[in-house]
Every structure is written in C-alpha cells, then in structure tokens.
Length: 73
Image 1 (tube, rainbow, N blue to C red):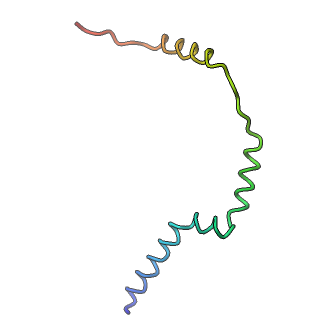
Image 2 (cartoon, rainbow, N blue to C red; image 1 turned 90 degrees about the horizontal axis):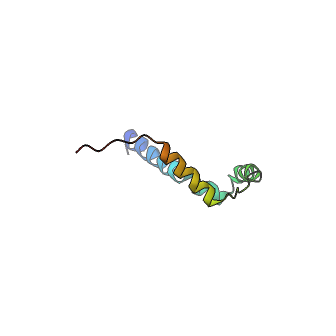
Image 3 (spheres, rainbow, N blue to C red; image 1 turned 45 degrees about the vertical axis):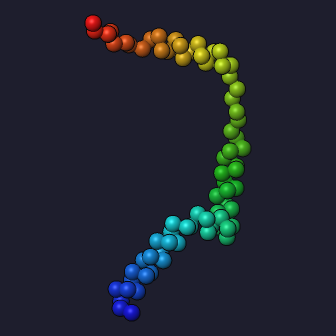
C-alpha cells in the first residue's frame, strides 16, 4: 500500500467518525454533561398561555396597518 492510499484511508476514517460523532457520544455517555446543562437551562423556561382572541385581534390590527398596492385597471 502506498503512502497516498494510507492517507486516503485515514482521511476516510476521520470523516466517518466525525459524521457519526453525535451518535457515538450519546452511546458512550460523553455528552451527559451537556445534557445536564441543557436541562438546567430549560428548567427556568415556562409556557406562556395567552388568549387566542387577543392574538387574532392583534394580527388583524397589524394587517390593517400594512400598506397595500392599488390594483390597476
């Protein structure tokens, strides 16, 4: 095997590992720290429930304020 062939083989293996890294890290448990950090960030989030009628009125009001193009005859 030539040096060029070995270099291509190593590059192909590096590309394969890089493309599969998220799956490999998840299986190996390497990303558990980032999962904990994400869970900690998400614990402060809350769902805001609003009235859909109020939202619909706001959308209609904003649409009414938009400039329009007059149709030519």
